[in-house]
Length: 338
Image (cartoon, rainbow, N blue to C red; front, side, top):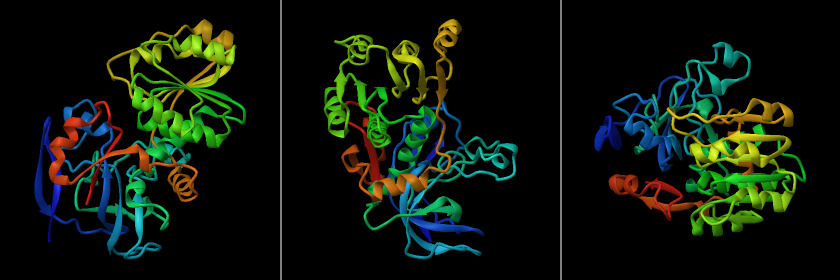
């Protein structure tokens, strides 16, 4: 049996192909993909900025229905609706053995090094397919992975009740972080975002104050609203100039989370005296260790809303248009639906 799949054939080249449907191996299930989102990593794999295993079926944010079971499946069954955690670990390296599974030395992510979800069918380890409740649509199920990554960012920021938070960038991930900060107990959420439609969306998602960095100095806004700086600052835009300014936005004892993916060949300067004098923590957030189940529970309980963050839906045959508009004004999550 064959299926349609989007394939990155080599750097900067992709095409829709007819390929064999994968046969689930021991411990794997076969998923009929229903929704699969384009992540910022995908075009970077295509361009060579991020590592990929060519030829590759990309797509690591997806959900679907189980249609076949490989040998020795212990829990899942045919007909189950599932979301996929694409980050498959080896389980035996030092990082896995110490509980840092997201830092696995032998990590082989679906859609990056193994075939992913930009296809009609995808094979996935049973351990990395999570049941969705009937309250969660397939589109929302494909948003579990980015939501799980956002939960990791909240964990790294250690947000407490009453904290003030600054979020630089109100794209998809910024708007997920806004909602999570509110759930975590933040009392004031300040957002800096140059796109007017995204600022409006941020307000609807729970931001208290939004500002346009082209017109307003965000540092003045933070000082006016908090006097002493924010408890937590998230750099979500993945911009070097934005990351450079984060240190001055946090209060003494505050946390800066470099959440967005900056260019790998660029650096920022940090004054170590300023860090020590103010006992600041500068950290990053990587992947989604053990955060898929919490993400699904938040969606099921209605605490996090994602449907409004899906701006465009395409059939797989319209992949060129989907990638063409990715990241342009007016887009948030672009999704293939099957």
